[in-house]
Amino acid sequence: MELQILEWINGNLHGSAFVNQLFRMITYLGEKGIVWIALGLILLCFKKTRKGGFLLLASLAVGIVINNFVIKPIVNRPRPFIEDANLADFIVSIGLKLPDSASMPSGHTQIAINSAMLLTLYFGRKGTWSWIPASLISISRVFLCVHYVSDVLVGAAVGIVVATLIATLGKKLLNKIIDVWQNRKHKNQEKVTE
Image 1 (cartoon, rainbow, N blue to C red):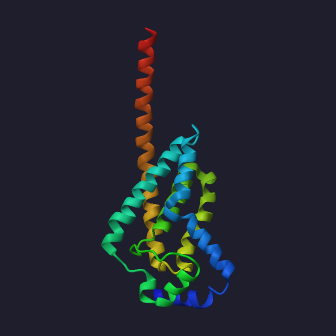
Image 2 (image 1 turned 60 degrees about the horizontal axis):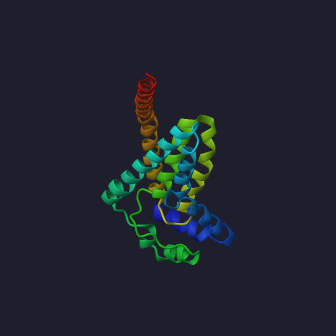
Image 3 (image 1 turned 120 degrees about the horizontal axis):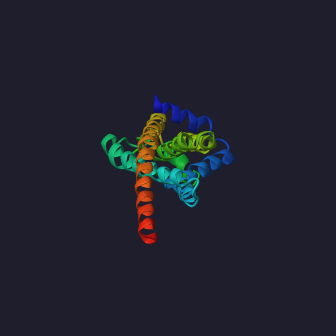
């Protein structure tokens, strides 16, 4: 049934070169998590957002390990274009390289939803903007027929779980580390002034 969804998308929604290229650009936003990693590094540069940036990068690292090195090899699901050569023809025709990794879960989706969830949990309303690119990246994976719908749903679930755990546990751990560091720094300053 999932293959039929992608075949319907390929037969009915890929008629516009502009839309195809737009989704291709959107999917590139999620490539290897570069945009999200860059955002995490930018957040690290400012004292007010430093903890959030650290948690974002930690959440991305944990999510990538779980998604790509634990779940993908276990499930080892072939990509949809392996089952239907027409999907492969479409992907190549718009200038995308055929991915060679397993299909489930979607790495682009896991990274994007992980980031949006972490940013929302940590920054509240200020982080909710991130759901727009995260959702578009996730949708692009199905639109471009490189993932089944369930690959995207599982990737989103993994991202949500990882981000929630990191936001909860990581925030507590990070606060303890900062407290210990500040106490040491304070003690060292006291020794210097004695």
